[in-house]
Image 1 (cartoon, rainbow, N blue to C red):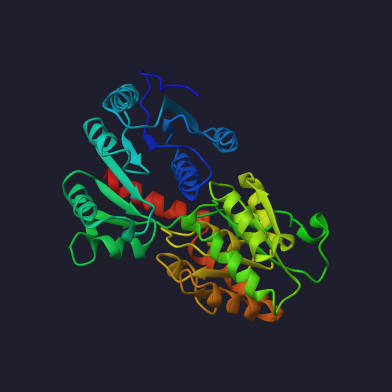
Image 2 (cartoon, helix red, strand yellow):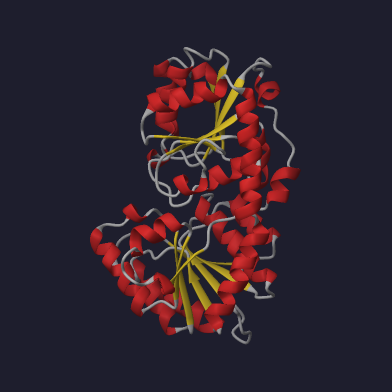
Length: 381
């Protein structure tokens, strides 16, 4: 990790609070690659000392420069002052033509500093519109109108939720998240049945994401306990880690399904597609979702998807074609959807194929890069 050379004009800086393993970090990676594909060098500036070594290696393997400011997250004027000084110093030396903020946190100070040091300031919204309280919505609209060069939303659902009826559509661009379909299709399939000693006839459900309340894995466990009564061949793999893991392990025991559930832990980016291709059905039971990258990954892997009827998931998934939607937090409805797909192998295959076609038509990296070329051209001209 290095600091920008003060004698070099750096076209783009992407600012992000941390570099962990979430969807925003993946989106940051793809955004950086899209700029690099336009021969625009990129520095990814990470505020806090919260950097996952696997994700760091992913960026560095693609020759994406990481500048770690090493700040410690916390309250207090002194810590905020340290972070802002370090950020100001790096941006001043970098002389970036474009500064792209992935999150407008902590507070609005990075946004205020960045505005002073670039001609083109972009901020991206990766969360659902209802994530913001009314005062925050008003502030976001003001910033978009008066402070930012452009605001990017990763879904039309989010853009409509924040800006519909304001007449500000010209200042807002929707650029959905992306993935590399060729990489997904080239990945080897991880055989969970063989690996875990499960019977060949097992129906493998899969979840990929943070083990956090907002991601709804607790609802999935309840649904599995219900669906198991009709599908005794049912199994569940949970890929990911988080603060709720211990609670979820306890919940599985209390529901009497601990033997059906495998906690696979965190996987590298390269291993996600292999893991997902080993699922018969992928489940995204989120309570809130700004986009739903896990749903996109499952579709690219040719796996049908069951998702909450919430936020951008209703935009990513075509209900009845690439997957099925169920009401948020409704374990009974999810169990019914699991049984519906569990007993219909032909329907699972049709939905999986339709999902691949949907990704190829709307979300592949080639399409994303075309959108980014058009966006940068419009932004700078």
